[in-house]
Length: 486
Image (cartoon, rainbow, N blue to C red; front, side):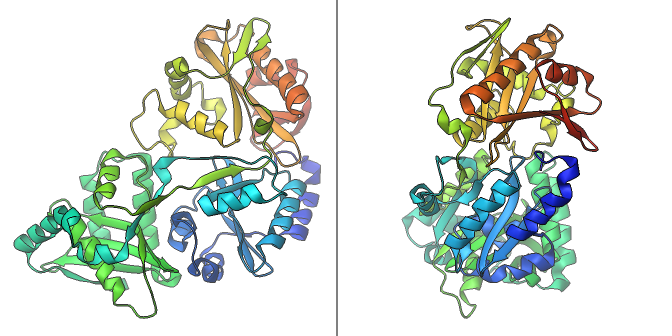
């Protein structure tokens, strides 16, 4: 939508309706697509509970055309789509190709497993795919039968924890929860929150969304069960079924009940096995979000495999470049990132005031799930570049010098647009370095990538406006927040 002039917005929306009609997220719209999800989806991202819990700030919406579903949501501040599910995936893909071109969007696929990735690679309509996955978000898959009993030597640790629980609290009392139990669950979550006062932004969000899920889980076909000790709730789980897979969205236990986690997990699995109509073979316990403790715990339960979830960008301009070149730019030079840039890049990303006009505050970034160190932002940018989502250059005063800033080309649309941005460390600002770097990157995008380059800045950001216009850009249009240039 950034590539549409303000006067053409009505035309934009009419075109969108003509091609595919995406219905915004609501509980009702999510319920409409449940039959497609219940038939079996490749990874945890596409289960109803996950879509409900993580729809906030993602512009989630659904489209059903010719009995075929595509989901659209923002990933990394850019729209992405799921691979079509239903009767006519081939016809839906043709519609989607037209949709992204007419609406000036990138063609990106999210929640892509290995099988779907191969289908994308073999489809001649999908030119020059680039892809990457982050192991933090890979799903852990377990045997349903093994989790019911934890039999065998490899599960001796889990059995010991359960036996210790029984010794302390008696035979586990595990049952399905009802709406009458919700106040008790909320009390547990309050106590859980107090036990985890040092939670990171993602953990706090997950707790918030868990509370929201409690009010709707039954209407989405989910199941909740609790572990009780003397009438008090010690742990609970929420899960759902698609095909032969049980996905467990939520597992919460209070630390004061020793052995509650494995007792709740195995008990929930046995409880689900009593339900008629299912032939459950595997369990998906979602990802570890990069948390070392969670990673150790999930591996101790002996997963039979992991599902890597790829982000795929079709026909990104980055696919045209085997190796990023050095680009002389007057008083500075643009080069690829280097391992030695990590500390400078950390400083660039964590300077709150400097990033105010970059519309970024690392303290609110839920994708940062571990300790903030020199690798966090560097690794994130390397992922974006592998996936074809961006082309990032380091700005230096000489070819072997330290990084003093960054220029980035991103928001690559299917019809050839690219957005250009630049930021310089505060101690190097007001010397013309940003202007030189911005101008060189714009020329590279135009001549080498063949992209139609645009830029934007906050309406009140006079310094960025001068940098952009000095590089030959003219005002294009404005909205309530940004001024756009071509």
